[in-house]
Length: 232
Ligand SMILES: [Zn+2]
Ligand SMILES: [Zn+2]
Image (cartoon, rainbow, N blue to C red; front, top):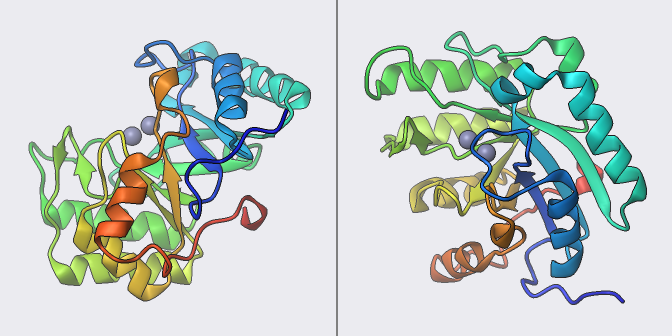
């Protein structure tokens, strides 16, 4: 039976979820995520575990597990990774491995110096976007377990370079990021957005109340350009 999608006009896709391959997963799993996505009426889900966690178990096993589950699923299942952005803007993994994936999310989880250095953040993120190795920039205003308050010109630069390189930005309910200013700038610049749960618990998958409410409150719901799975 086809399930109804409860969050129209948001796309029925959740392109950032963690499985048993991420150490921080609470109860998610490749099988469980897909089953939950089907129940929620999602059309597509991506499994995007932390590259640094999957490294320990091995990428081959990971990719084979997700692809086998994708083969059996009734919806589109993308094999992806959440890849750390190194301080020099390069991905933490080699490009040949990234080419094997359907989707790459780039995330800055650490900054070179203690705390949050805005200049370091700016250089690292802009370089990573220019190198164009990711499909989606993850939680842009959340680094090191805290909110990053970016000046307007930095937000503008990030949006310009993301747009030029066809990189989407996620609306991430797990970290409630990006900030309102950042979301507005993306929509103004035409940067594609994608709603994600960044689920570490099954109950978070495809639950987009935060996203819908946020866009309604900002009066942007009918102005967003959404990332489509076909664009990847
Ligand atoms: Zn992350
Ligand atoms: Zn994540």
